[in-house]
Length: 369
Image (cartoon, rainbow, N blue to C red; front, side, top):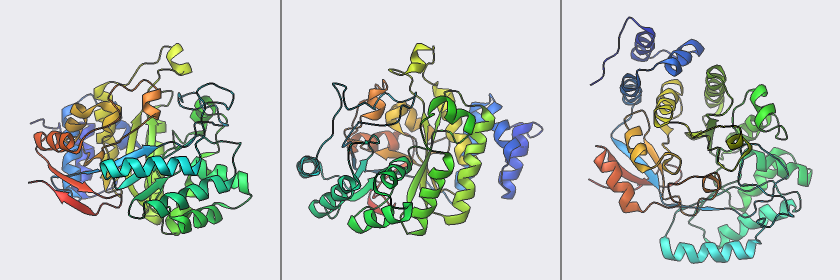
């Protein structure tokens, strides 16, 4: 087993973990600058267990829906969005979406719908509210995890309502939680470079803060591996940690590696992050985010074998079956768009962990010995 040099910078991090002290900016930089990958994994797993973690590894049986890829924002990292005039653009009615979801549910029995879209300027707020209401009426036992903070903000522009009014109406219609997308990197410098048309990061926080105070749990993310610095990664995590201190509404954190294919960054020579980078980010996330209970190894981003390794680097969740995922696929993802429950169980078991099927809110549905 890897051991840490207690006289080095990681030794200071370990001493803080052992003492239950919070890590700060300098500690975060020490973690990201370290080349001792195995020691980082050991320390992150130790921190997870010290904070109450067990051998349980969670996953959900979920499907991904995208109702429209038409988007007003031209994020440079996105290969999914389209303008209405482009050949591959689409917008699906609520009726068509529900009909497809019901048939899919009859065949698979998923417990969660994860839905995000482009910010379509050619629809109104009723488009979103009616979709949630129709899905909830047709599939009342399925949790609806829908719409990023950016989409919620877009709905306020369409409707003239506030964030709170939009969220209340969606919650009343059947919305269960929000995904964490749209966070990217919070640093203003980075936002200007990769998403100049997107709202200020304060808006992302206001939407999630409002959701938490309305009793709507959410998730949080970071898109890493493009133009951000280590300092900006640490700042991003510290801002999430402060928000969780205030409201406690984040269910899980998901670090998302940037996929440059089919984006302007591919033409500029950007490449996928390495497996070592991804494992380091998971360890970093677990060590710094001491108040978010679940850290996901997103297998569709890194592949299931690497996600299994990540379970020894602080992760305790492998997301889920992820049926019909399109956004990473559009950016050149090659890991497939679905994982069978049996395969998730096999990989988790082979990693020496206990597979636990959960619902969106981390209630246990099934456990394997």
